[in-house]
Image 1 (tube, rainbow, N blue to C red):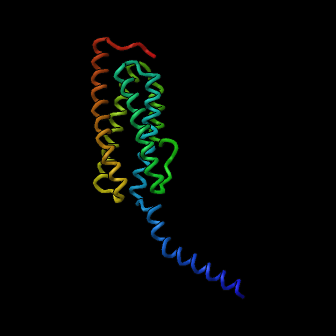
Image 2 (image 1 turned 30 degrees about the horizontal axis):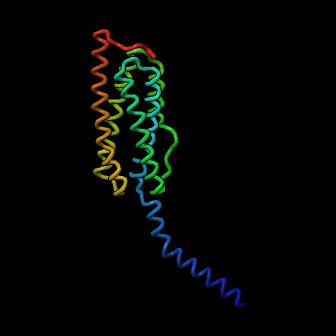
Image 3 (image 1 turned 60 degrees about the vertical axis):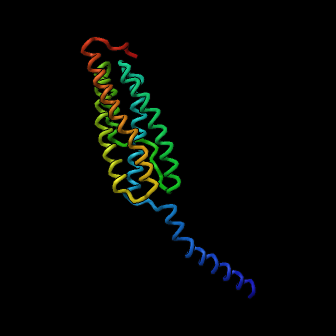
Length: 187
């Protein structure tokens, strides 16, 4: 009978610990709201898409401004995804390992182009994509619930705004080079 009593005491202690620690543990590991979680997932997919698009541009772009921009996309979005993965682990959010359909379609469209047509299409896609991502980040900064996710979005937003500016400048440079016949050699 003494063995049964010890068993019930241990069971009671474990149950009591679960009741006391369970809810706070659940908040720590999954305290990210649906909107914050979706922001993190969409951001990871965008980062992966930007890296893959940049890798494609390094092999297909002919103008140095497009190639230079592509390298910045690879570097910056790879770094951002490492930071986001760390934050996601802390928040108990599982991130995708591949990009979304929209980015896959963009890559397919770009792969069908070459030369200066590729450069222009790539940079236009980067301008459009960064405008959308900036709006998503601004929304997270304004309306996000999790303070850590909001802080990361706020910290990352200026880099995205610089990307938009650089993509716009690179496209203008490509247009200028095309107009004046100063394109680089195809890779």
